[in-house]
Image (tube, rainbow, N blue to C red; front, side):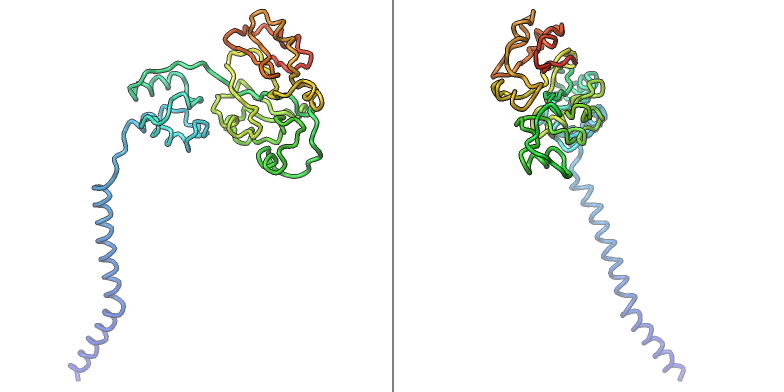
Length: 279
């Protein structure tokens, strides 16, 4: 009887073992083997990261603004190390750190003139609308929907696309005139707003510049006059009065040569449309 009971007990244990415990043990063994193989192969097949990339990244501004055209500073650092990008593409990084990065890369350091972004439009409420627009959306979405809200084909819509992408709170809509403006004291010229603006009216000017033309319309003056009170009409008064030959009307639009401009402000004073702004 004892032997029969022991045999039955053993049979029951083996049934439980085979049904429940053995599969668990097998799964654990397979998992352990796979973990070992992954760790082993991970070390053997791992692509070694160039230590210079981390050094370069530590010297970048760390803004991750995307103005350089890459998805963050890490991607830009890798592109620099591969020679696929230029240091000039990153505006926020200080000149001192750019010099250090050039040294790490073993390339000549190119000293660049500091720049800032500038909204080359002063229209806003001074420019007629195509029609009433009521609803949500930024400049980009409204531009895709209806080609913009302004009668001027390159008029600032003032719907905050530029301010949304700016990581430095350096650009926003002036509620008094309904047009975007740059706070030059905060701008680092990352280029995010330049790329985001669907009207393409934001561009770079030298940080030291004293004046700028707040218009981007190349249409004849009589056309500009139909819908904008402060648009450039290409009259040439600024050109005739500039003592340094630093401003000329090119394709119906006043253009400043900053290499010659001394910032005297005479062009802004003489402009009949008040299109030229003192910075």
